[in-house]
Image (cartoon, rainbow, N blue to C red; front, side):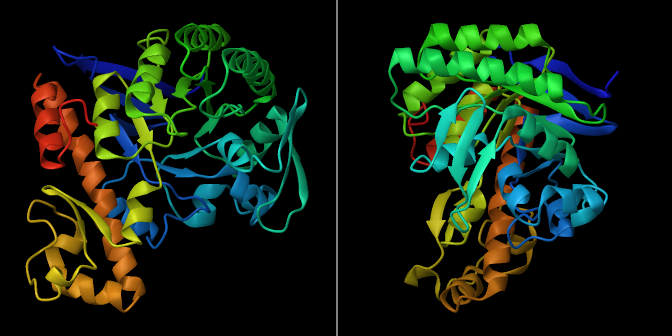
Length: 375
């Protein structure tokens, strides 16, 4: 039997927010958890030591991108992704489905799989559910994802219904193709904004017996209220004893609203992407470090943050690095934003354990200028 389990420790008395432990083949991950994204076996500008220092307990790598560069067979020859990138913590890989979705102009979906063009050189590529699983097994991640169609928003009920049925067939094919006992496999719940399709997809995936369940098809253009409903529709049909992963979500309000609804795992490129443009998440809200007001500001970026950036450098120095396009600036700002979100979920776990999650959420959102719903 796989040494991969989820244990629910406590549920907040006023919400569905839950405190848990994910045992990832002997490595313990406390949930809720935010997972930094390392698309090409590297969290941008951060070393594996940096990743450990911000207390990240699990990171992501990208199936599609690693398949193209350097090639999953090379990663396999290196001894798997952990040896390849010299990182000893748990690693999750996506299925490549979202990347195919983002290449909508070149993709053709059929029952066998998806034909699309490489974003690098336009080479024609094909990926079937079995291919996605094979690539992820070569990469050697601890958690793999089923291959699915990430449905655009908005889409008609009839289209979403057909897509969900195909995603379910692909999920079964991927499950049948999966052979690694040292790798967990998650099913992905689709269904757009339609509650009956979300429920149906979740119920059918649960019957197949995956190790965990992802909520897909969010953050693809829908408004916040619709996204939160998608989460609720999906979770309603998922079991209590398996982890729930909301894919591609990293905004403060979305993480907190996801936790409130019972989500355990989050990932997003947002914190590092906005850091590279000078935008920082702080305990007093977002700031943009490139503004002139910080040129002579010799205070820390965030007095309440314990990261390397905030402990050692001033806003004036960070402003200077950013304006000069120095790589150190991108590294320090990325470290801060990632540590900020990891600290956010650490504090959320504490609040859940003390049955005060709603008060915690409302306090955080008020600092960011959101209303109580996080809009």
